[in-house]
Length: 339
Image (cartoon, rainbow, N blue to C red; front, side, top):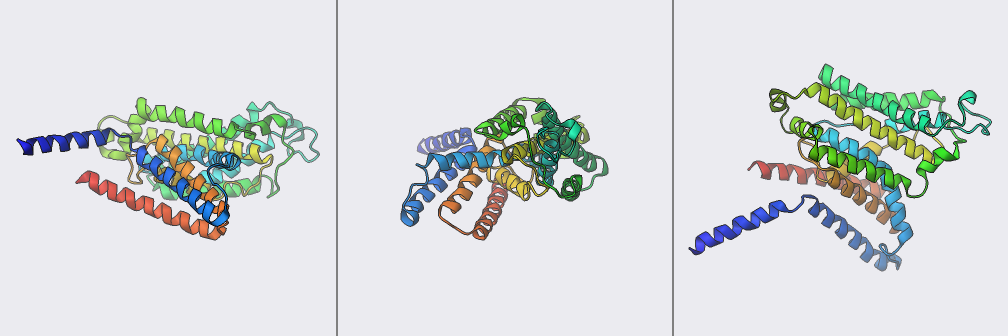
C-alpha cells in the first residue's frame, strides 16, 4: 500500500513539474545573474547594479534590436535551420531606409528629389528589402536543398557588400525627425514587445506555428501529413528577413544615421538569445517567451561586464562560453527527453 502511495506521489510530482512553464528555469537564471552582479557591484565598485534605473533602461533599449532579430531567428531554428544573414541584413536595410528618410535641409541627400517623404515609405522599404533577402534565403534552401548554413552565409556576405556598394561606403545622415522618432525613447522596446507578442500567438495558436514545429520535429512526417514543407520554409525565412529589416530601420532611427558596418555580429547575438532561451538547435523546440528572457540575459550580462569594468575581449570570451554551455545543456535535454 505504501509502495503504491509513493508511486502515486512521485507521478503527481512529475505531472506537476511538467505543468511548470519551461521558461521558469531560464527566468531564474536571469534573476541569479542579476543578483551576482549586484553582489559584485557592492564588493568591487561600491554601487548597486539593480537599483540604478538609468542602467536598467539602457539595458532594455540595447536588447530591443537584438530581440526583434531573435524573434525571427527563433522561428528559423525551430524548423531545424539557421540564419547567419540577419546582422548583414540589418546593415543593408538601415542604408536603404535611411536614404529615403533624409530631410530636404540636408545638403548631401542621396536622392534630392525624394526627401521629406512620409515615414511609412522608408519603413516599408526597410522591411521590404529584408523580406526580399529572407525570401531569397528560403527559396535557396527550399528549392535547391542546400544547407541553411551555406545559403544564409552567402546572403550574409552579399548583403554586407550591397550595403557598402549602395553609397560607396559613405554614411547616410540628415534624417527627418519623424523617422528618427522611431528610435527615440521607449519606442524600440515597444516595437520589440509587440513583435514578440504577435509571433508568440502565431506559434502557439495558429496553423503557421503548428507547421513550424512539425517541420522542425520531423520533416518527413510533416511532409507525409500534408504540409507543404518548401512553401512554409520560404515563409519562415521571409518573416525572419522582414524582422531583420525592421531591426535595421530601428537601428538607423536610433543612431540618426546609417552606416554599412551596422549590425555586425548581431546574428550571433540573436542566435545566442534564442539558444539561451531554450530553443533547440535540433529543431522542433522553442518559445518566443524564452527568447525574450534570453535576450534580456544577454543585455544584463553585457551591462554587468561594463558595470564591473571588465575589458571587452573578456566579455566576448565569456559570451562564447555561455553559448557553448547553452548548447551542451540543450544536447543533454534532448537525450533526456528521448530516454
